[in-house]
Every structure is written in structure tokens, then in C-alpha cells.
Length: 485
Ligand code: TYD
Ligand code: MG
Image 1 (cartoon, rainbow, N blue to C red):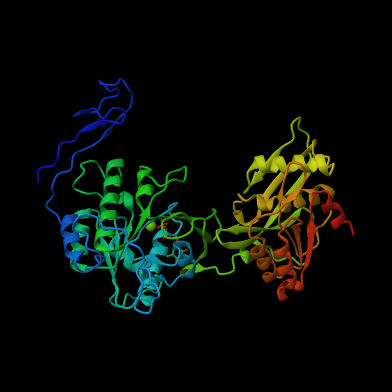
Image 2 (image 1 turned 180 degrees about the horizontal axis):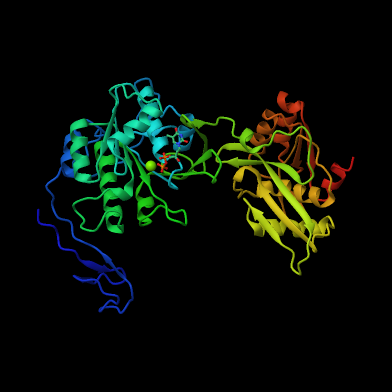
């Protein structure tokens, strides 16, 4: 096959040259040329071949021969009720933590990108997903293509994870996209896992695998495949040192769903987050634990981030966060010690240090805490990262407790945002936070007085909430009287 000639295009003025130059002769811009090789036909199975094959069988309920359909009002059935709307069809993955993050399961023609550090468990997760999805959806086929591992390696891992296959899971080790398309044409799978994006290359682009133009083109082709052939595609993406998916940003724009799999070094739990989802809410959180038998779901994540104490310790408090729709209790720790430095230190892990400085300043001003000559260290237990102002009150309580060397009552949870004036402001979805605290056995909950009346009444009525004490405060100073007893 004659390979298309490489060419370079200026990103500033679209000037095209055959050899790379540092400076554009047309617009004088420096470092603006990127490889931009025109598309040429190939010998392998083309995307058009695959599309043609699936055209009649899947996803073609509308006649799109003209390229458009008219938007018409909803129709009614014979009995006058509205015709049910076509909803997204999904495959349950059999893993409830993964289903939640996906918005209810894998959309049948959805394109999902899974990013994460090396060794975090992306391949393991997708292999377990392949098993789960087959158990839940008899008759469907999953094609797991790896550009990183040999068939023996994938099979070995699958066997270690106790995955049998039962005629539904097929493995491939291939990096050439057109060869993968040929396999897809033969196998006709409903779900494809591709591990990983940076290892695949298409013959339509001449540059090396993993290059910007390859990554972009491979993604674009897979996207077209997902949408026109009605195949759900899960693509693994490498991340850069900064934690972004390697390659052009357009990759994340193209796909339907972007998930990140993350974990702290040395910790066995893993967090799966949605950062983009066309089919569900973002900022959902799934929690897993990596054990000898692969990834295990953690259905009660609060237990992971709370230490099992029988006695309270000065400098710790419990915050009720919301990760997506999911409430999560975490322990916050503060340490206030005399500083020998001219400018005392404010060090925080897991929470923005500007936020901690702000809370410290509020405490200094309104509670007269002498923090000006004290170092302040702050930590979120379990390596979790907080970015919700709803944890302000808990952070303030931990700092106050450490500085005064006063224990907060065991089993108390703090919910509320702090204003610079010292007021405690209400936060969203207090009810699910309170419910989670009650579920975890907490007996004392400190809430902003401005929490909506109807909600408070409901909390008081609620059988579960009756057994717990609700403390309502409107200003930060009230912390003191609350725990002086
Ligand atoms: P892997 O899925 O290969 O990570 P990625 O695809 O994101 O690079 O996971 C590899 C890590 O997981 C490896 O360090 C070992 C660990 N692991 C377990 O602890 N238990 C297991 O059952 C498996 C399969 C892996
Ligand atoms: Mg892997």
C-alpha cells in the first residue's frame, strides 16, 4: 500500500509544508506546525465495511437516508396515553459501583474513556466488567483487545480473577486498528474493551502510535464505530504526569463518558469518578478495594475513611461530604503547635491550603483563637480530597479542638459552610448527609440554623433522626458553648 505523504500544518494559519519548520513562513509563528497527513485508503478492513455490516441490524430504527429527521410532537397511543419515549438502552455491568458512575450501566452505543495511573487497576476493572456484563446479559459478546499484553497474559489474569468466559468473552492482542476492525466484523460483539488508546494506530495516519494525530484519529474512528454500528466501546487512556489523559484534549471532547480511576500510593482502595457523562450525572463516585482476587466493591465507603475509635481525640472532627449523589463521612485532623518561624506554617493535605488559611483567619477573628504564632497542619484521613465548602464547619471544629486541646464529643458530625463574617451557612442536600451520619451510628449532628424548616421538621420526625441530637448553630462562636460542658 502506498503510504500517504507526511505533511505539516501551521495551527495558527493553516499553512501546509512537507518538512517540519520551527517558524511558519506565512505567519511567522514559532512552533506552530503539527503533523497533518491526509487520509488515504488502506488494505485492512475499513470502518465503512464494519458500518455497512451492522447498518441493518443495529441502531437504525430511524430512516436517516436523507441525513435528517423531523422533530415532531409526542404521539399518543390508542387509549390516549402518550407513547413511551425511547429511552437509552443500557447493559448492566453487574458491578453496582461501576453502574452508578456510568449513570446506570453501559449505554449500548456509548463510548467510554477510562483514565488512570499505571497499575491502578484499569485493565482489572474492565476485565471484571466483561464478566459482570456477560453474567447480566446472556447472549451478548464482549471483545477485549489489548495492545499492551499478549493473549497469554490477559488469559492468565482472567483465570486469576476467576473469569471463565462461557463463550461470551473473546480476547485479542493487536495494535493495528484495521485488523481490530476485521476481528469485529467476524465476531460481531456488542461490547468492545480497548486497552489502551495510546497503543493503537490506524494506517490512515502515518505518524507513530501514541502521537497526537494517531490518538485523535483512532478515537474518531472508534467513535464512528460506536455510533454507527451500535457497539458499546470502553477505551483505556494513559494519563500524563499532570493527571490528564495523554494526547489532545479533543479526545475527551469526542467521547461520551470520561471516567478517572485513582488511588493513593500505598492504599488499597480505589476511587472511580465521572468527569464527563452525556448519559448521567458527573461527579459520581464509585469505591473499590484492590484485594488478592481483584477489585472488590466497597458499598459502605464511609467505613473506609473513618477510624474505629472508642474515645474522641482532640484535633479530630467528622465532616459529611457529598460525592455526586452519595454522602460520605470523613475524618478531618488538625494539629496546632507553637511556631518558631516569623511566618507560621499552614500546611494541608487533602484540602486547599487557601481554604484552611481562610478558616484559620475566621477562627482568629471571631473566636479569638491565638493562631498568629502557631503552625497549623491539616489532614484529611484516608487520602481523600475535599473540595466542598460544606466541610468548613468540621475543619473549623478540628482546628479549634486542637488549639484548645478540647475533645469534641465522640460521635458528632459537623455540617455547614463558613462565611467570612463568622456565620454558619446552610449547605445543599443536608438530609442525605444527616441520613448517612445516622446510618453510621453518629448521635450528635451540628447543622446550620438556616437549614430549611421543612427539612428540619422532617429530620425530627424521621424515626432514625429521633435517636440523634440535632444542634443548630448560626455563628461560629456557638461552637464554644456547644462543647464547653
Ligand atoms: P492493572 O489492572 O494491570 O492496572 P492498569 O491496567 O491500570 O495499569 O492492575 C495492576 C495492579 O493491580 C498490580 O499492581 C497488581 C494489582 N492486582 C492485585 O492486587 N490483585 C489482583 O487480583 C490483580 C489482577 C491485580
Ligand atoms: Mg493495564
